[in-house]
Amino acid sequence: MNTCLTRYFDAIEYAPESVIHFPAGLPGFEQERDFVIVEQPAHRPLLFLQSLAKRELCFLMLPVLTVDAEYRLRMRPEDVELIGFRGRRQPRIGRDVFCGVFLTAIPDETPTANLLAPIVINLQTRIAVQAVRPEPAYSHCHPLSTREMVMAC
Amino acid sequence: MLIVRRREGESVVIGEGVEVLILECGAGKRVKLGIVGPREVNIYRKELALTREQNELAARAPADRLTAACKGLTTANEGAAGTASVQPAVAKKKVKFI
Image (cartoon, rainbow over all chains, first blue to last red; front, side, top):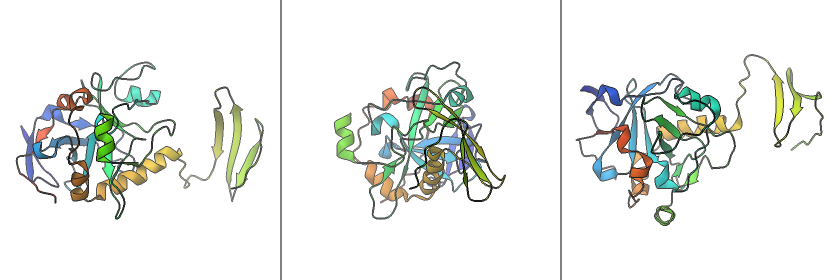
């Protein structure tokens, strides 16, 4: 087991094989390549995507299906290949890949999720990409309304 | 908004030194553009520009408001989402954000 310092939970232990690697970094954080996912039972299904290199960098993330049970993944072919899949077939959420969305909140506004650019992780290799959709079919600031989400599930 | 009609092979010039060429008006309503501009001008797809902006906001977002917004959220779809397969590390320290 390895140890890293986190933004919210002090030191945590993680298995080396659970490291999530983003070969291209994240838009705006291109230098940040390696992360671990942290969860705390009390906050499920919320996940914390913690940078290994920068303690203060930690994104809050939800599995996309808990925000929109009908969410359809659509990745550009270059993103599909970047995480190790071939051809034009879209990977399947939960079977081939994990798919999560970043959360944000600005003062006085409902917190939102970025459905335009999900985090897609290859479940076999843990190679990941923030797959910015080729078309604006989903919002980059989808309001998080608990009531709607429960209905959608 | 300025609206200009152009055909394949034609172009428009924006400010000093940025030229947008219409290379191809293909099927499926897709247009192929060629953009010529100075090296110091960054060119992104709009979706990518929005994502950069959202990521910067997300990195600074107050965790207490986000955890509060997720309270009561169903975990019914976690299995389908593959959360367990990414093997999250479990934080032992209990943090109350609110």
